[in-house]
Length: 106
Image (cartoon, rainbow, N blue to C red; front, side, top):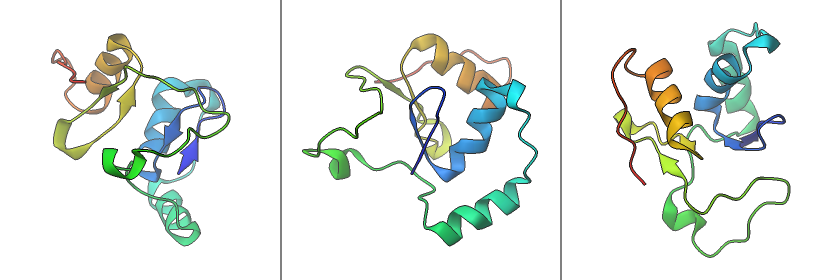
């Protein structure tokens, strides 16, 4: 897994570049997604988030923000985790269905 140094949230290799480009656009990431995916694969970085079953009973990772009431995007198997409805709406609108209203689930 990866961690956003700015937000201190957990990212998968599948969500990392999109997260940086959407939420930290001033960084202007220029790496091609295919090259990034190859590098993540070589390093063994997961391309999906751990399931609830994998996370149950383990300690929180030091340095990450711990949210007790997060929202999970369930659009087409995405599994992006957001801390607020506003963040989920922005994620959904930007990455999935431009212009449609998001109805997040807990």
